[in-house]
Length: 343
Image 1: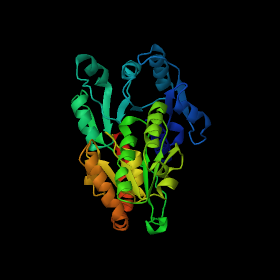
Image 2: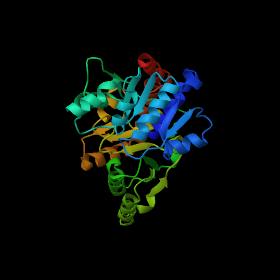
Image 3: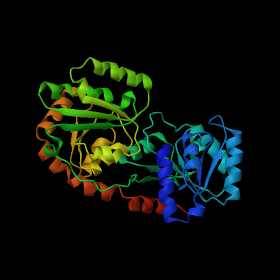
Image 4: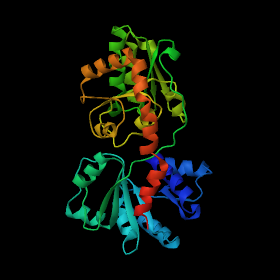
């Protein structure tokens, strides 16, 4: 969410007057630190507050909005909505709430109907999330729900085949180290490749829960193919690693719209995912890949073996994903969609 907010700020500032685009964040957070050191973030403001409902946030945000004649407020998240409601009460502010994760608890009681009554637009970054917004959040006759796919900048990368990799299939997983992302599953199902005698290298990219990583390391230590799996950690240049990979194995338990998958599609990797949340929707857009019955590790293993046995053909089929990703997830399209709802 933090990175997505910075990305949207940078996209909008190139289209609109950069002196009229502000990035507002909580003091002492990742965004605060990034804004302090990133010369590309021209105008930003941090507000110090402790709790989700904070008088400090209410008064400081309200004062900032009035002093800078803010007309549009794009909010990433949900936790501080109570404070935002009071901060903009009585002001002519176009409040846009952007959702990037699936919410499970309904917010349609009287209290939440009041707090969310100032929302002019909801933005879901996938059809799955648009449906989730309609199911969970209170809507008024004036509230509009919008589908705006997030965009990414895609570098030009050559597609590498198994022949160029000396017969070794390169498999990658990119994501925060946490159980729901499926790194444990991705490592386990590679046992089918080992049993089939298929040479592979698996790279796990990302950082996060250290206890979860310790569990993964201990699990891997007991496997006969432990030397074929590498923990890379976090990287700023994920496209470089994707560019030397063949298969994106991502058995996540659920996503809103994963940047990692879009990046992998844009690099022409053969993607294998579970059939949950947003994944069927993405491949219904025309992308080539393999969507496996949710939670079925046996079918996931079979699909992985089949892909790796036919990797040349699979990579050829996935090449069309490169241009398609560039069209569907383009910055121009995303900014144009936001332009329709900004005042």
